[in-house]
Image (cartoon, rainbow, N blue to C red; front, side, top):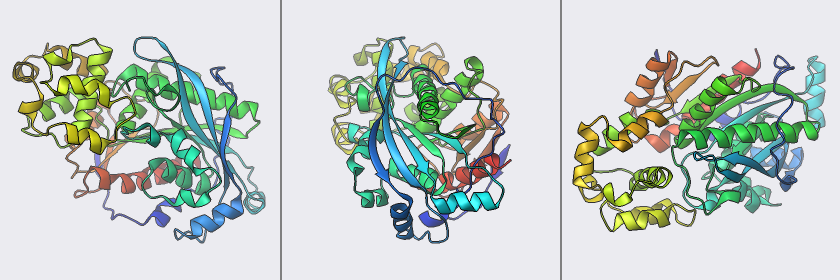
Length: 420
């Protein structure tokens, strides 16, 4: 079912006001153990009290909600890539610290303070400096750095932890943070799922060791690549991790059906984002030992492996690539991909698509009808195949523009779910 929501892009302050209040204890006996996958003591990256955060959110127009203090930690944990190789991955855990006023307000309502967890998977990044733990490390003691509107890491910290009181976990992904120098497994299902699941287990261990009042509620969300990663993790959790109990899953504008995505790209004359496409081709070539020269023309085949190790920005990569499909792809490969269902890359795209299961957890796919990077046919057809709801945020928003109102809608839904 496709649900259409008529929304305008609301200001950041209005978006953030949606997340106030704490979860209940309906999952009290779930998600309480965690796995001993932590590889080193957590490193404190920032620590701001509620008074500092109250002043900060007032600067973005939030004056009627109490702010939580926050402590941000970098954790390093064990995970595996698609080949089963051990990886030392990293991620950011932001812990809300309630003020005495928040605790008193809950007491008057007869409520006990507890913490729900949101695992928020970031969209596509290229330079390692944009990984959540590296963004957090630059904040240090400078609370004003949290006013940056350009970082999804910071926006998540403010929305989910400072205003919402959620423990927010943000995996860097393999290839970033502590695993920089490894080719990022871009849109590979196993690696994507593993880095989230192993971080959830590690975060639970971190929280339990620190005696945090976790209430057992775990939510998953993420935008663009993060939407794909979110659904990959949810699918794997439901299949093989009965010890992880999810409360709600809300992927946003992700390429869940990679075959449909690939067909759309290669049947067009130009690529809107050659950095995205180049990253995917390089990821699959490296992981499945496919000679890039069989898919991509020179000089691009030689250049691609150097672009996706965390040292280049998206703009720098785009400047080195072409937007022309015919200039980028080998002609015989393009024709075979479009006409042969047994084309190797096409079969791998089918294998790595994440829309081939029926969710047991409450799940919605959020998207924008006007998105040309992730066309609406992808979330709409995926939702129909999965038997879940697709929520259209708006008919005119492009991919980047869609993110803000999509996060608004997701935060509202999560707030409803955790209050049940």
